[in-house]
Image 1: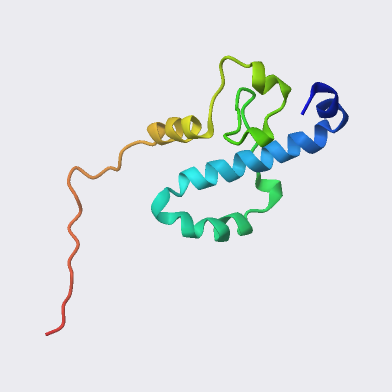
Image 2 (image 1 turned 30 degrees about the horizontal axis):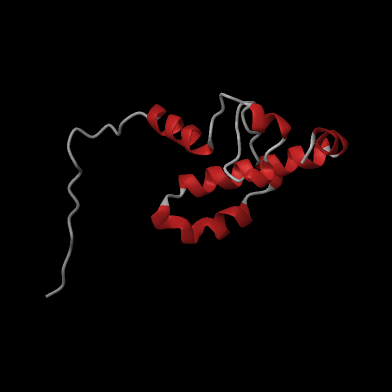
Length: 106
């Protein structure tokens, strides 16, 4: 898209970017082994709970790029945002792995 087209439909494109940002974040947060849950999680997330992307975010899919994304030299991807947030989570308070007792029937 060119600059004029973006300015004419700015609110539309900005909303599409918000949707895409939230899709990417949820897909990355679910990891590969839980991708089957994506449709359920995405379907239950009301649009009023969408988070706005950071100003320097650039979508993975070029379809959602706006003109400044093409000339931007510094940007942050959804993966970097997820990685930063995971690093901020404090470790669990266990000093050792909790023991789980498994009951078996004989």
